[in-house]
Structure formats: structure tokens, C-alpha cells
Length: 388
Ligand code: NAD
Ligand code: USQ
Image 1 (cartoon, rainbow, N blue to C red):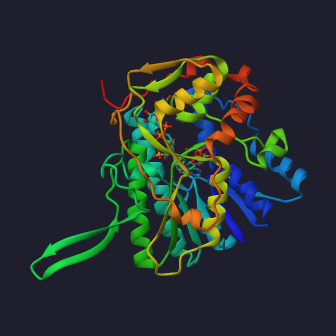
Image 2: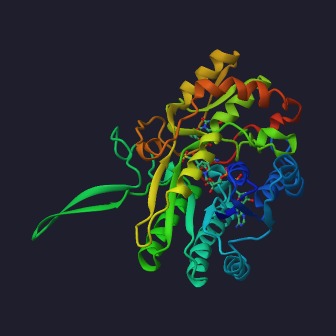
């Protein structure tokens, strides 16, 4: 299959590009390198030494004898180039990772809030609009987030996969409807993902664009069977206070002897998935496309649910790391219940990589190996949800 990977230089996009290329697909990466530019702006770098795109692609050619193409394009700003690319390349599937994805970065200042909205909303809308203008029947697979549902809205009731059944009282009697689960974003970044959902619903209804929206939990881990083949293929590992996500941050903090940075009590319960499973889920999604005229297919892309404090205690037990309870920089519930439906991926054959199988590998093979690259001053989360 001819596949475009928007955001294919990123943490989820790069291993996905390699996996799909290995499976024999004709892969083209599109990325404007904005995450690498934000690294420079924030004076942070990936814990792992990530190679340039041309080094990455030539290393892949060498180890696999397969070619991945690369186009440097800003999909939020360069509509005409995006349109010509779709008309010329005619991809059958388009995997859309190309958004600003850090909640703390999105809450840092009015500049980063506005950048996140401009970038993410325009990226998604330009893509949908260009697919229609190019008269292309490509399947869009978008990386959404579990955070669109919010936390605690429905108590301990399981979060369904995208849609919820409601009953409405009318003078003529009760009506039953299936609607998008109410959106309850916890950051400007998460808000952009709830806006994406409405754009998908509209373009699926109006133009019969085929969309699968993957509501993904927090991704942990670094390597996949392909990124491990050569050091120049290594995946990125963000550990800084803006882009680092909780479990990978704890693993790296344990390796350098930094007390684990639990926000508040750590009663926040979140959904998780290993990067190896992210890549497999995307392959499953492209192999099971919606039909024209279907409403967007929504899958909850997660495999496990944990409380932040339980993760910290588990890592503390395995490594001897101490735990620090910090004042929470975010505005979020101090504790919440979370039960998530993920039957669709399991039914389609996903076999989850569990925490118990991967935690220590990550500490030993990644965090400890690149310990000399750590800048401990970049660990604290300084982005505040409340304006002082
Ligand atoms: P990432 O920042 O590492 O990758 C995103 C890539 O998109 C970057 O390489 C960036 O340069 C590129 N990009 C951003 N805006 C662009 C634009 N306008 N034009 C072209 N390229 C652009 O992030 P990631 O962790 O790989 O996340 C990928 C997607 O998955 C995001 O949409 C994110 O919301 C979603 N997601 C990530 C996680 C996670 O834990 N990492 C969890 C759930 C959902
Ligand atoms: N947290 C800590 N200590 C830390 C970092 C985070 O206690 O050092 C807490 C946060 O306060 C929060 C939870 O851990 O309660 C998760 O934070 P996170 O940074 O790991 O995840 P989040 O900000 O939600 O964002 C990440 C990705 C985002 C994706 C989302 C999936 O950056 O792209 O959409 O996970 S989800 O959380 O399911 O919405």
C-alpha cells in the first residue's frame, strides 16, 4: 500500500514508518521538523542520540534494503504543496501524527497556546480539505488521545470507544441516539484533539472521507524491533518537563538517581501503551479501513491503566528510586477512576506488551546507556496551568 506518514520524524511516527516499510508498504514521511526546532527553543534534547533524517533514511536502506522517501512540508501552512503532493502521490492511507503534542508546552504561554491551536487545527483541516479537493479516496488514520474524554466525567463507568448512547425525551416519546462521547479536555493541546474529532465527523458526513481516529493513551518505551537494528535508527526519548511523559520520565529519573516527580498525591489514573503496540495498532487500523459514508471509526488505543503513584512505587521497588510529591503544576483532579474499553484492537489481534515485561529493559538498555546525555536542570515541569 502507498502510505503517507505525516509527522514521521516523531516519537510515534518514526517507528511506524520503519515497521510499515518492513512490511513492504511504499512509505513517504512528511515532517516540518518542528519538534526538533522546539527542542532547540527549549534548549533540551532527546535522551537518545537521534540521527538527522538523511542519516536515518540511509541507515534504513542499508539494514533493510528498503527506501523511505521524505518531504519537508508544513501541513498547517503550506496548503498548495500539500494538495499537489496528494494529487501526485495518490496515497491509499495517510497516517496523521503531525501535531504539537505536549500538554505542558501548550499551556506555557499565550504564544504556545496559539501556536498549538493554529498548528493542530490547521494541520487537520488542511489535510481533510486537500483530500476532498484532490478527489482522493485515502483512508486517514489520525492519532487522537484518551484525553478527549477527560477524567472522571462518568465516574467508574467504562469509557466507550468514541461514541455513547443517549436517550432524549421528546413530546413524541423517547429518542435513542449514538453521539460522540462528550469532550472534556484538560489542556489546550487536548482541546485541539477534541476539535479534530468534529472536523472528522463533518468531513466523513459531508464528503465521505474515510477516517479512523485512534484515541491513544500515554506511550512509553523507546525501541521497536526495527529501531533497534542500528543506532542511527534509534527512536527519540523525551524526558524534559514539557515533552517528557510520566512513565518514561520516571524510568530516566530512576536511572540518574533523581527523586521521581509525582504531581500531587499521584492519584491521577491514566491509560498507557508501549511504543511497540502503537506501531502494531496502526498497522491493524490501516488493514481495517472504514467504508465510504461510515462515520469515523474510533478505537481506544491503550493496553493498561495505572495510577501515577503506583507506577512510582513500582519503579521505586525495582530500582530503589525515591519518590517526591511535588505541588501539581497542572489543573487536574488529584485522583480519578478510569476504566477503558479496548475490545476492538484486542479482537483484531493486538497482544499487549505489559509493564512487567518492559520496565527494567527500558531502565537498563536505554536510560542507563545514555545517562551522560541527561541535563538534570531540564527535568522539572515549569509550565503552569494557572496564570500567576
Ligand atoms: P512528536 O512531536 O514526537 O511527533 C510529531 C511530529 O509531527 C514531529 O516530528 C513534528 O515535527 C511533526 N509536525 C508537527 N506539526 C507539523 C506540521 N504542521 N507539519 C508537518 N509536521 C509537523 O509526537 P509523538 O509523541 O510522536 O505524537 C504523535 C501523535 O500521537 C500526536 O498527534 C500526538 O497527539 C499523538 N499521541 C501521542 C502520545 C504520546 O504519548 N507520545 C499519546 C497519545 C497520542
Ligand atoms: N505527571 C506526574 N509527574 C511527571 C509528569 C506527569 O505526576 O513528571 C502526571 C501529570 O500531572 C498527569 C499524568 O502524569 O496527571 C500524565 O501526564 P503526561 O505528561 O504523561 O501525559 P499527558 O500530558 O496527558 O500527555 C501525554 C502525551 C499526549 C497524549 C496523552 C495521552 O504527551 O500527546 O495525548 O499523553 S492521555 O494522557 O491519555 O490523554
